[in-house]
Length: 445
Ligand code: GLU
Image (cartoon, rainbow, N blue to C red; front, side):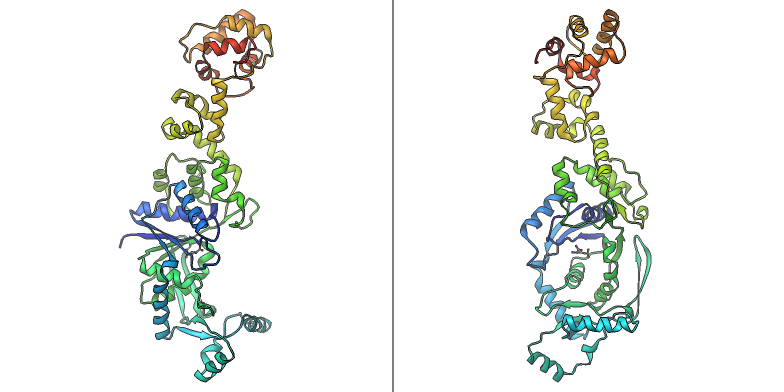
């Protein structure tokens, strides 16, 4: 059976760096296996799900280069869930229960006070038809619980290895609420069956759902897929990430100017044994991907580490990878310009600064008037190339006796208006003779 995985966010918020890891792992795993990724919007909660969030998530994934073979929405698939409910009721695996949240809470408290685990006592199973009728007459509506088989559930987790859960230690999960809406478990399992999902890859926060889900697959006459639960991402202080934290949203990273490939690389390697280094393309990430490299400890999201990775990525990107985007921000320098400045960029937009330094007009900073004047007089005729700077600066050194910082700092300040920047041997030919001469004379150019 060919590998089919899904990334299944609820469109109740934008996705953040943590969700992106789940998306990336599914995408990379599918690519590596030559399989398919399905993008599933878990939007059964129609009050909290919005079209805007759904579009935003889609935009974030596309920006990162995560491609999917098929997109489905749970809100289009209610018939399937209703059919599963009918089948589970018919087989006696779904039973009505009438306790209010307060009554359940009271039961839990009593159990805990007696030192017992707070597992649902299945009192509803003992109700007779008459009991149910009179409860309903009182105006109570049932919620529906899945009757677990009280046995050991075992799976070989792709990340965590062999897992055992004694289902007798679990409460029968509620699958359908009083108002007929579904909790996440049933639509998820029904879809995983219908869509032929072979591997469920998701965060560790879902480990506790797996044993009941495996039983639900079986109760619906399906073979459960393989499961892999990856470590979760926590903030720099170890706190859980929240959809409400804007600073970690993909949209805000994009607005900050972080490259999609930097986010994708970072998401794929933090919390693994691989070093945090930039990858030139997604294919490299696909080749490097292996569940065995995932650590069991939480992965820490450090925005500064991501920024550093972003800079390193920019420093190695070829001109062809950025040409269009440079033009879109008004930077018309060619390959020579890109190669001259890329090593000085934290984000791509910084290229506009160096473009304005090269093209002017720029207010030069004259620190040593005599030296600059002498240097202007020694500028050779064009055409200029990389060798122009060493030859010219040696000539200035010889003529003025200035050397080291006393020579280079005033020249850089006059030519670029700033103390630091790309190597002058690269910048000088781009600035050109006319502008260089004027700037050395202290003129705006
Ligand atoms: N919609 C669920 C979530 O976002 C999907 C969980 C799963 O992958 O099974 O947590």
